[in-house]
Length: 117
Image (cartoon, rainbow, N blue to C red; front, side, top):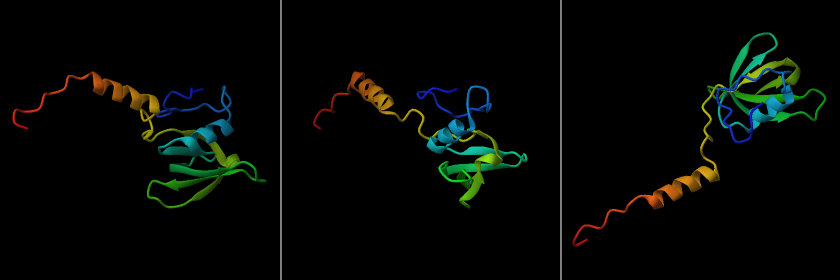
């Protein structure tokens, strides 16, 4: 299982080996990149998980494909796993990363202004 501070980019979860499908779906919903949904019948859909609803009779996710078509409803029962195949657009964009960059910029020597400027 991944920690909250690690990027999920490239993660290939093994459902049932320390992680549940529901946990993977929640992470896919929070992920700021494309994923590949592998369905029970072996078909794949690459896209962005825009919504999920586990509190209905037939829990499902909604996915927009790479072309922007959708949303496509996929019942949880039809999902074998979800691969985190797209670039994690939020990686390194945390407040802590911003603060480190800001502190580093203050430590760089400043170039004095040109004479007469």
